[in-house]
Length: 169
Ligand code: GNR
Ligand code: NI
View 1 (tube, helix red, strand yellow):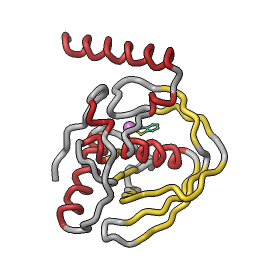
View 2 (cartoon, helix red, strand yellow; view 1 turned 135 degrees about the vertical axis):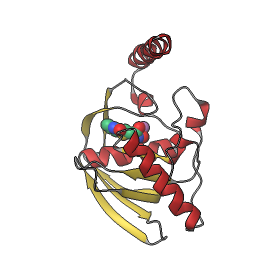
View 3 (spheres, helix red, strand yellow; view 1 turned 90 degrees about the vertical axis):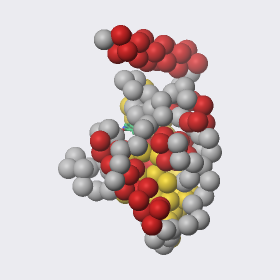
View 4 (cartoon, helix red, strand yellow; view 1 turned 180 degrees about the vertical axis):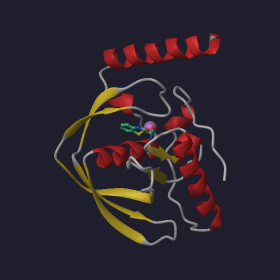
């Protein structure tokens, strides 16, 4: 098992569109284990393969307080969306910045598990936010893309400032 390096904005590799997974083999299982280790190590509630520079449609999540409800979705597709919610989002690729984003309240997702079995699952509330956030990463999209240009440039300047302070400390 290993903790992988998480790409940070403005790394252009975060804009890569992930390819579907075709081989449900031991290498995939090892990669999924590494993604969980990386997500838990970073105290994240989700992680997309894009963020660790692997451009395959793999996402992991765990929104439980006890950190004991791991969820892995491979080749996920949204079948249905319903309603709207506003949630304050953060992202491991944007350390220290948070912003309100409007997304669907509920999503019905078709995906595969690590063995390649098809699963259809319904998500609602914070977990639905997380799944939509991770699926965006796999499409090369990030949460600040939803903000107004003014709000986005304010937050990105703030992130840059914090980065410089951290580097000089
Ligand atoms: O750890 C994370 N927290 C979070 C909070 C609100 C909405 C989405 C997220 S996902 C984020 C981890 C991450 O960057 N996943 O891509
Ligand atoms: Ni993210």
